[in-house]
Amino acid sequence: MVICVLMLAVSVWFYKPPGSSSDASSQPAPESTAPVATPASALRPSATPLSLNRPAVPQVPYFKGRILAGVNSAKSGEHVVMRLDSAFSLSQIEAAKAKAIREHKPLGFLMVWGQFFDPKAVDSRAQGGGEGLAHFYRAFRNTLVLVYVRHETELGLVPEAVKKGFNGPDEGGFAPNMAVVDATASELIVEIPYGGAKSNGTVRDGVFTAGAQKIEQWLSTHPDALSQNPAKR
Image (cartoon, rainbow, N blue to C red; front, side, top):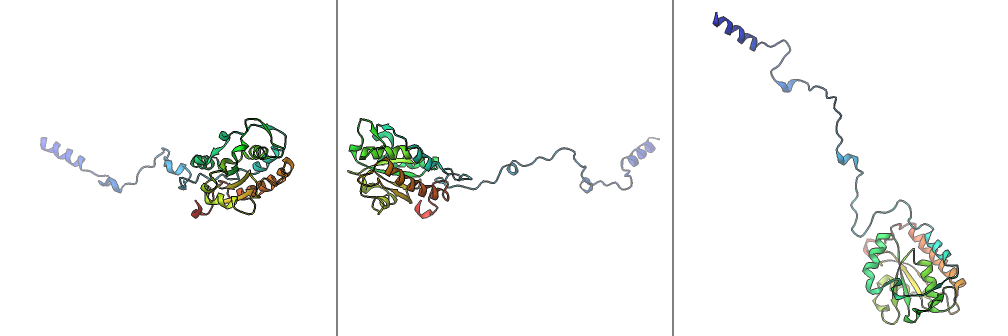
């Protein structure tokens, strides 16, 4: 009797219904109703490696219209006290470059004499070197990163792109004048002169407007304010 019961139990244990299989891998996996997770990498836009010295390029020219707006804002009369610390000095050129790269601005190297920095306020619309410097400062202080270059001792120490402007035909023979270069000081954009021996605010308005238009044109194809020639960076 006991033997019969054991045999019956064994036969039940090993019984396989038709179509069944002992190999679980041969069975189709049940359909899951849980949502499928999307990898985090698929949710992020693909990143393009950037040079440490080349920030992301804005989709539209960052300076469109702003250079000319600065020149136009300086057409109103204003008395200004010019100080040596109102712009970077040539000894601070690396800090000036870093600011220009960070803010997508060209650099403006202003040729100056020490006598331009008078403790008294000067009229930015009048004739004179200090007055002309005040006009340059008002017109470009917000749209360029300005660097003062002392005529007495520093003309031979500037980057080659700046020398190209200072020694070129557009320098005009009078200080102050300004060499505008890209944010790394590698490419000359334009040299903006003082405007001649009888330069005043009205004369400089025309000179500055012409220079601003050239900067705007350059920035339209260089919105990050960097030279597109790798050899110049």
